[in-house]
Length: 259
Image (spheres, rainbow, N blue to C red):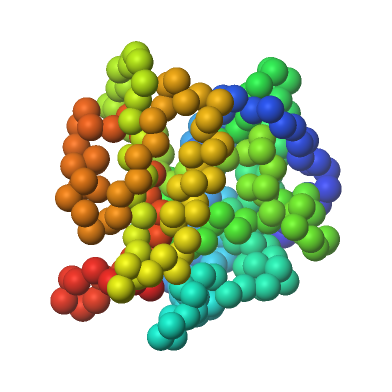
């Protein structure tokens, strides 16, 4: 598969971002060996034709399994990701080769340049993917202009001018204006015996401290995932912001448990 020299498209970096414009990347598996990747919408336009990328099902499954295997699942373990920077870089570069073929790189760099020319704006990557691709760890994707380098600065999402979300925007969703102090419902998952091995309470405290500057507008409240309060927080009108911290999984019988 031929690839354009990605060094032709340096990616700018910025900070102090307060709003984002969307770049929608659509990726669909075409067969057991390949996926099609295209940009459906962006500040620089859309791609006229999708690019076909070799990414066999076996390779995707191996990547997914290697990522999940790095979680400490032994009894009494921390439950945290056990991964070195080198391992994360390898996974990130593998994902970049799928997500950023040459034409995607060109429009991505052009879009980012366009939004950064407007003070306070950044670029939000929206991943519109089928189920065979959506659950891969795209958050580890590496900068396509630094594929020949290593280091923490190479991870794309460490750039504050770039954000990433899964699923395309739903135009049917309308956000109504709100006034006054709004509730932020923080729901954390604890381990058996109410052990906080994921340090969700610490995460809540860091979030609370970080929101002090806007305390007159946002009121953070903590609840555990097993409490009634946690589930009422998700009902319409109960909370302006819902934040979940922790990990969970389902067994063959549909029962939730820790991972």
